[in-house]
Length: 268
Image 1 (cartoon, rainbow, N blue to C red):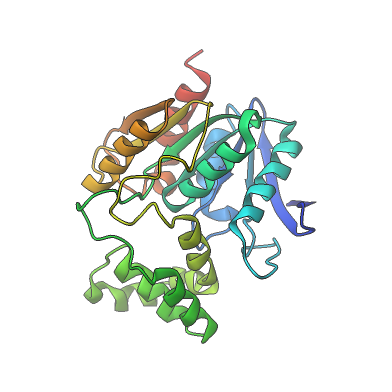
Image 2 (cartoon, one colour):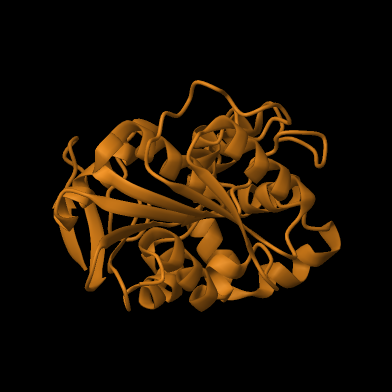
């Protein structure tokens, strides 16, 4: 891992692999750069790939109070490491930050590939609770990290309660509890995007081409969110990834990377 110093003085750890046009992989909630290692490896066949520990994760710093704007500054610093411009990619909950960064950084972002943004724009599934951020912060502040993970899993992922005991036996649960504070971080970023209402018309201004991919086995609310983004921004292409569901960004990195390559670079 290499490190850089972001605009506010925070250390950000990152890994650079491969060769070709630059792409930055933005990880999801409750994971460091290792969570997207499979996709980074697959992309490195055609791209110079930068994966990194978002602040509050891995070897990166976590100054308080948390401010989503600082994460955009982190991505800006990584783009400088990449040579001044880069494409961005993310899956699920990292999509909000990725779009915010693409909007803020303008011409430095050459393209965007998103896999299944979890936007809730209609009544096809329940929205995020109104006090979602505050409840997560209260649980973590009280040292109830496992309870924060359980709250996220049941209220947002909508995992049936009977599955939780087995999930808690898996080592991955402890890793999620370690990063439980990041659920509130991403929830702050996703505010206004998961409320069962139309996407805000004035949040993003992005000229770069954007692909929003949905697995053919994906949920209806994900498909509705992708269509809503295409209606909100001018340069959005909605794609389908055959035979995949929401887990593909992590569990099926090769077809995700191939689709991203085709969109961002073309078949040539």
